[in-house]
Amino acid sequence: MYEDKTLTCKDCGNEFVFTAGEQEFYAERGFQNEPQRCKACRDARKQATRAPNEMFTAVCAECGGEANIPFQPSDDRPVYCSDCFAKKRNS
Image (cartoon, rainbow, N blue to C red; front, side, top):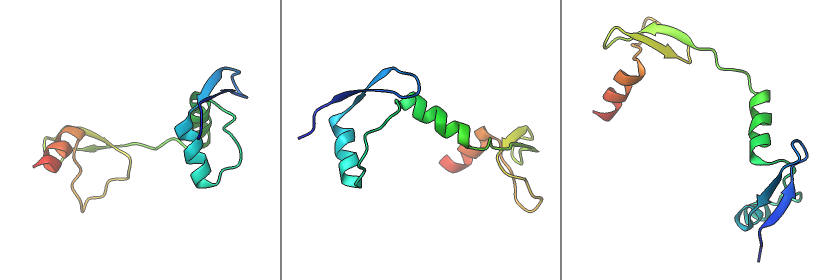
């Protein structure tokens, strides 16, 4: 069976644990190589390659407040702020 391993991150040089569960996951997926970066450096690397989401401002159809949304609003569909959207989804 698998045992936890301590590895060194190639980006920051900090040690991190490659757990038995992670090793099993890698084996199930057929991955041959162990991870070379700690979770923080992997996450930072992923964020660096993603384009930031463009946010749009609209008026909430329910309360009239400001709604920040990740898509271009259109006139044919209502837009809701976070609070009103949550209320509608829960009811």
